[in-house]
Image (cartoon, rainbow, N blue to C red):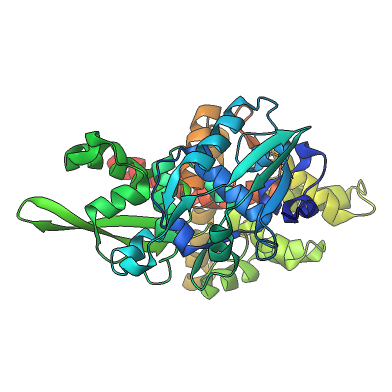
Length: 426
């Protein structure tokens, strides 16, 4: 058997494994037949199956033996660059020895397509390199699938339970359709790897497997799934899942043109343009924290007036905005109309002052959050599809400014709604 040298993951990742990030890895184009499989695999084993396949997929049509550094394999499976290989070896051995039945969803309708195999023909680890082999029949199926799903390594590593990861993969293929078909209960048990006799009782299967899996998929992935049941009498015999794409957190411009138009008509935006901040940055700052955006502009204008800043004004403004330090000494100015101004202008000024009051209240509430409270909000944000890969739960801070801005943009309306609820109840 011919063995070719290191494959696609090695080309895309640094040899310094500490720099390897799942964010830089493309999604896996995984054959539907290899998604809809039986076999009781653990969470780590399921993750490893995907990472090994991702490493091999570009050349699997011409070879079936591949290599990958164990540190890369471990990192991309969500374990970090662990030097403890015992669990990795045990997982590879299980994958190679577990009988897998492929295309389970289709075999219910088309028994002629039935086939089984092991997911790996064998594996070895030597001098920090994992060498593994696929059975020939399996490479033929995986090489050029007609039907497939795109599996994101970064998403899969958010999962904590194997049942949930399996449910996610089995539903992801049908995202565009919006639902799976009704499938026999026993088939879903095969697909999720929940075939222990304990789960013969649907009550136990639902409470110990199905409900926790659905909750985790909805919390950590990019889709929302909802089970529907078909019964014979009081007995559940079939299940299908309704599938919708989870709305993603917006980093920059809102989806509503009126909101964007209002931002660009604002005094804060005009003043930000005057110091050459740029449209995208101005929109992002005002959208995520309008009070701080206005305070930053006032602070920078004051420093310009005092001739403290002589060059790179946008860079100075960015450092001020992202520093997190208090700018209350430079409150945003709200123009107050003369007493004899038209009623419409007076009303507009009052609205602007009310918006400013709410913005200040929200900012104060965010600054008063404890680290534990912030961690809870970040967890909810990630559960709704937000990115917080640079968030440090011990310090309560983001290392990456765009991620911080996107999170604050999501957080502000949550805090505002709470403040309004408290005010209404008072």
